[in-house]
Length: 179
Image 1 (cartoon, rainbow, N blue to C red):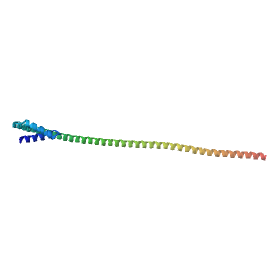
Image 2: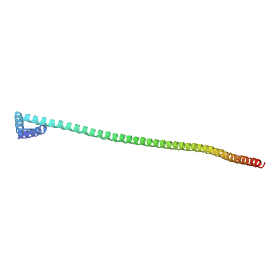
Image 3: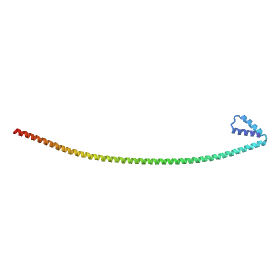
Image 4: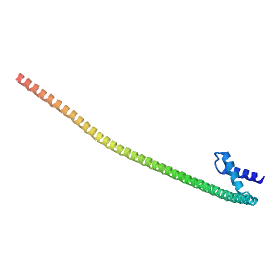
């Protein structure tokens, strides 16, 4: 009965450990191995070695499990630190963007103010130039008025001289005719 149990255990463990292509060949192999340990002490030693092997595997699995838990904890810590750093970087970027926007707004306000000053200055200069032109136009109007006054005076003088010559010519013609 112990042989059958040992055969079942070995068959089950080997089928788990290796990919089995032929189940019958596995059973024959297990029978050969178990029969080669025909004595009970051999079987007991094999059972003891198997138990020890399982214990070692179990210890290794516990160590691996503990190490995996530590790694999982480390990964969680790194993840949290990374999230915190990303959050800080995002805050820094947000502050930089706000500073840039503020600077752009200040620059725009300065440019607008400067442009308004230039416009005001140009308007004032144009007004001064327009005033000068108005003064010059007034002078020309005054000169034109004087020329018109002189022109009227000369026209009047010309008419008077013309009338005077006409009267003298008529008087001379009348005196010659009378005499």
